[in-house]
Every structure is written in structure tokens, then in C-alpha cells.
Length: 251
Image (cartoon, rainbow, N blue to C red; front, side):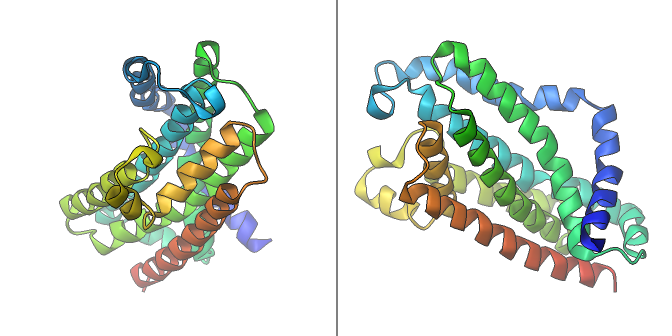
């Protein structure tokens, strides 16, 4: 119960400024909406799974990209708190360290959930077929994955608190190859053999494949199992690394 209450306290502390700056949520939609408007027409006659609309596999890729880049970058705000000393004062409290990280991560993921739902609704009139329960399961899987990535981002922020440019370089140097190798824009099944083989070492690949299977209305499939396992492993590893760094920061 202490973990849950501490998580709620951390979440409320972080979500307040976001709610007061609601326009950030709107502007966060600009990039995926631009991809929908400018990239989807280029797909032309490329068929989706089983002859469905290309949106059926393109939209889940956009949702994954939204979660990846937002959570990878969320540690940037923490670097400012570390330099000002406000985060260290927060760590002087007896709050659970994992709860601090989870609460902060959920603050990043709550607006993302709203953005993802808006993106799905916008794409529906253009050919996206809704499978609500499957899509909600996919979004829940992404939330678990996002907690892990956000925790790793916070760990990087603490490790590089005296050099904000280092945080930016490392985070984006990791996120961009993950996105490209994950088949976010196009399925990796269309890639050359060497590129497809390289993509199998990218955990994001399995998450993207799981989301696409769920978005076409399937749930009992191996890609969904692999994606769920990847999401849980990333969450556990991210929290372990993040908590270790937070404890070092509070010494």
C-alpha cells in the first residue's frame, strides 16, 4: 500500500504542471498527425495485412514511436531539477524510490495515452478498423514498456546531470536506430535479409509486431506473447537501473 500511495503522490506532484500546460499535449500530436497526412498517401497501393488498409499496420507504428521518443526524452526535465537541487530535496523524504520513478513515468504516459487515442480516432475515418479491446491491450503493453524506458531515461539524467548535452546525445543516438530497426515506418519483413536479421536484436521490433497483430484484431499469437515479454523485461530492467541511480543520487 505504501508503494501505491507513494506512486500516487509522485504522480500528482508531476502531473499538475502538465495539466496546467495542456497545450503541450496538443502539440505532441503534431508529429504523428503529420506522418499520417504526408506519409500515408505515399503508401499508395501497398496493402495492409490480409488486404486491409495500410493504416492497420502504420498507426500502431506511430503509437510506438510516440511512446518511444517521449519516454526516452523525459529525463531531460529531471536534469533541470537536479541542477536546481529540487529533486534532491524530494529524495530527502522517506518515499519508496521505485514509486518515485513509476509516478514520474506515469505522468509522461498519461498524456501519451490521450494522444494515442486521439490518433486512433483521427485515423478511423480514413480506413482504420477499430478493435477496441485488442487496441486497449496494446496500449497497456506500451504503458508497461514506457515505464521501463522512462526509468532508464531518468537513470541517464542522473548519471549525466552535470552535462545536459550528454543526455541529449546518448538518448537520441539510442532512440533513432531503435525506431528505424524496429520497423516503425515499414514492416521489417520487406527488408533485406541482413537488415531483417539485425532487427531481431532490437527489442522494439517485437513490440511493434505485437501492436500490429493486436491492431488487426488478433490476440492469440506468438508476436503478442513476445511483445508482452519484452515490455515486462524492459520495465523490470529499467526500474532496477533507475532505482539504483536514484539511490546513488540520494546518498
